[in-house]
Length: 62
Picture (cartoon, rainbow, N blue to C red):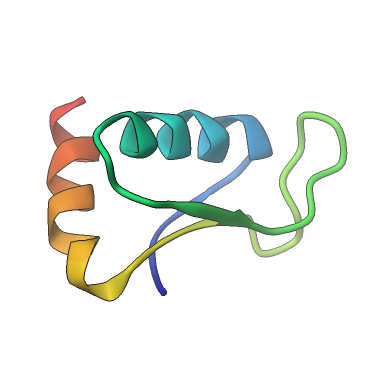
């Protein structure tokens, strides 16, 4: 799995994950969020390495 983006909050990361999964790209959100806040290092969005380019294009177009 490869980190493709880091978000300040869990909610933003989950919205991106849902967008990717809707397009058939598996995605995982990693990070500790408290309520609407992200963790110290933010919340990371990971996808399989071979789908990273397609995932970034989809998120940039969204």
